Image (cartoon, rainbow, N blue to C red; front, side):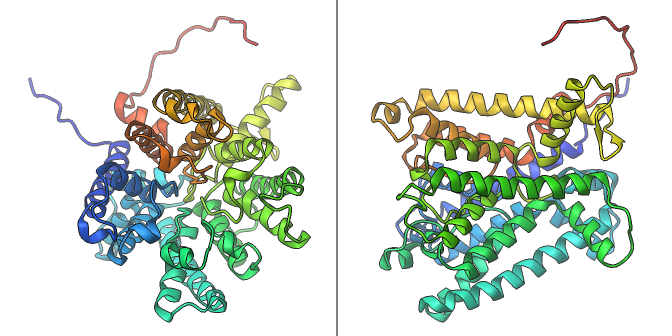
Length: 458
């Protein structure tokens, strides 16, 4: 009897590609030549590599003052590869040398970038848009940083690194020693008053979080190749606009009297900071105000925004805007006693609704489990009375799962076990827990149909 040969599925390839890049990145970052302060601890190197490849932004160390220039270059490469996806880059390279994509490669690309656009067009637009956006962002930031009397080399490096970090939604910065010498606070806080920096970073991270399938559709409309907007594109654009605007208004209302955040800023700067915080909370870890000084109401709002996250096929994480919209539409249909879930006069397929429910429940359980474990492993921090107590640990867990990177300042204080918990949470949040479970359990077609029977719910 001939044994069936075990083959790698697309889910396995996605998981192995990310795990392989993370492992290689951790080894490189752990080398003495990658650090300015001696060899990085293995858990810090693994954490930083995972954060970069999963485009999260959480970090147990300050990359700018801890890593050497070589270490920062390695970090930037990990961010770029993580933002696009290793399988995406390898598939594009294969096509450049005139090899056709295999079925497995096509499905792997679709898992990471979306299923609504043909693989070749999606790859071509993705690569072109990514490097064009990052190049334009670099040029604008290079001009903007000229106002801060930086040496040419550092000015150019800062522009390149933060443009890539913003578009890939990583949220990592490398101001490091320069920032300390000038008494700059963390992340983008020194530039909170500067629209040329803040709005450029915001534009890059918002574009990266829209999702490449929607950007392809926008390009088709601009070129006159398409007249009707798909339901997917409408949902993504409207949901993002709603979250950006409503989040900005609520954050401003929660914080305009808080002198530790935006209370001392002028009204235009307050509104810009509130808008930036609303946008970055769903995709990247940059911040123009100290996250640890936010009110509890703002922290809870940011947790919700991080949980929703970006849109499918983009560089951000979370359950995705489309998932949240489908669940909201299903709730509204249930309230109105409708049999179908309808968006823009089109019904949502039952399998999509089931996937949205499953993914949301898995996300809730992942974050809940991570928070519970952090409360156990970091009991020493809770005993010391960290600001907001368990809420801070919950915030870190949501930020890790949503691959956002905002932090109340707890991450550098975590134990080795706490860091490993967040590493696993970031990895699951990037590849998708549903993808992970499919890879573990396998994907078999169920041909049996069972009879219906009523069950009470609610």
